[in-house]
Length: 576
Image (tube, rainbow, N blue to C red; front, side):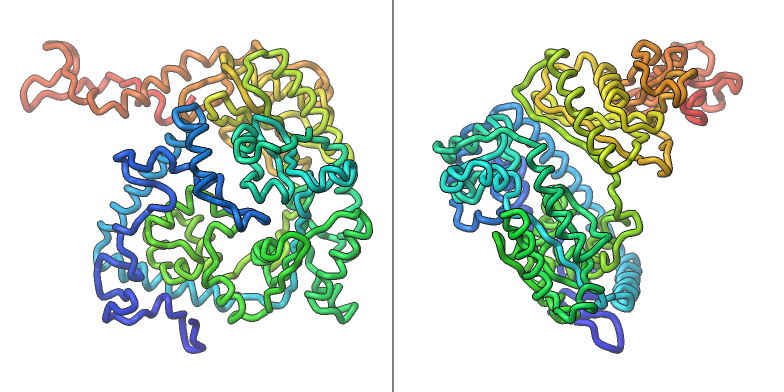
């Protein structure tokens, strides 16, 4: 669609309306603001809104092409309707619907002048991105086939022919391809999976086993790209441009040899995608799963053609919420996205606009990111809902041990610990704490437990997770994050192995805050939140002070006493 003389057809549509041009002042790129949203959210009449979250369970993974989607929907609806999970997902869907309504309102309010400004900016941006398109590299994304399940099958060959899932009744980490034929998949509650597949066999997670095979995989990948970077234990991005130059092999031949080497070394199979960008290579690796590969030619025409009918949900970074927002404007494929960039520029945030433009054009991620090294390292565990603090804190100790072992193995020291909890109602919360640089399990565990105790009473939990990040040398101290030194003025690196003083601070549970505040500042911090609540309360402005009180308006010429200060004015300039 890009001519040598100028920007692509998306931005230069005819003005007669046949291609959704700019002639109509309320329609950018031909998209109507009243476009359907049936794929992700129904109207508020309740006809289908109570099952809006179900598409998350039927989003196809490899090996699920023949799954009866209607049966999966019926089972999920039967088992979750009216439950906590259903209520939490419905709440999220309502928030998404509200956000979409605001976007449509913004879209409908655009003036003709503003539309012309947007179209001009889009044309310039497309031209810039096309000029920067880089097709010189060859990337391979290698993704192991049902990795966790495959590792267990190597140890127990009898599992190869039966439907098997790794996890338990609360949550499934992955499922083998036999189970996937029945609709069982990762991130699905085990009780739903059993209903779909009564013969399902559960296997406990064994991270030592996974790490053993992951280490073997890395030995293979290093041959093709010494600087490969991993997305997780079972996947990696490899820039094989130099390897191809040395060996004279093309991308398809390299991918086939790499897959063969992996199977020889580990007895595990993998799938590979070959493309000129990392993002496209990842999409391609899922194209012929399991145990297959797909090669995307290094040309602009091949890239645009490949993206034309590709569902937007296939792109990493586009989840259920963003998919729903795009569907509200009749955008379901990357081809439709490319033809609707004017709409995208009109209603989304700058960061999302940049991302969606690069997705639509198939540009970006051509080079290895400068910070491709690991940014964080964490583990989490799901269990039956419990509020037993001994059980939960024991889980955190175990997770801290796992994280510390991996940090020590990779010679990393973390300066931030993140706690993740999921409540029995499926509400997810994360809290962070900066610690002295360390890879000691005790430091990580104590930080996580400190954060947990700040949430008391936290009720019944069904998942906890611990993550270490901000590795030594990284930029620290975000404004919203408390440091151990702030919480304990005498703390230093020499005391990093000592227990944290849980009683020295209090955790602010005000919505949107979540900060750990020194006890001596508690009252002023609470006053600040009170002032903010009053300033947002529309009824507050309508209230009248008693007649005769200072500052009361008595007639048109009355004025507020200038010596008075409001609660809000005391804090708005210097938030406590």
